[in-house]
Amino acid sequence: MKKHRIIKNTPVITRFSPRGERGRPEMVTLEIDELEAIRLADQEGLKHIEGALCMGISRQTFDRTLKKARKKIAEALLEGKIINIVSE
Image (cartoon, rainbow, N blue to C red; front, side):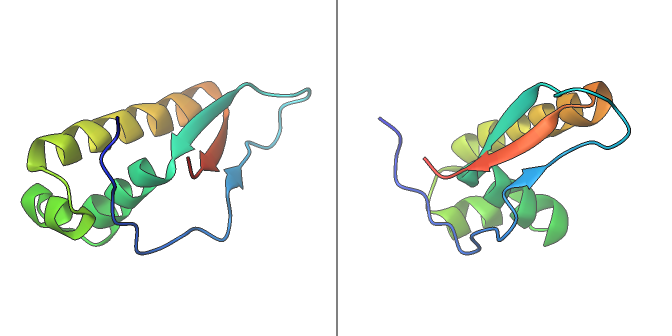
């Protein structure tokens, strides 16, 4: 069971789509906690322990969540996939 995570910013935009390709690209699903980890670490520049405290989770869980998020975003960017953001 997933521990409750504190999410301070709920995104207004929940889908990003590549342009220039015909047809319907595949989709990558980014969970809201993964987006929050990206925001805290990459946009706010917090250290992992600080991000973990903000989300109410352990540093190890924050690290895993951030790694999953970065992998999904890289996959979408490099393979031209849609990024769909979902809140459980």
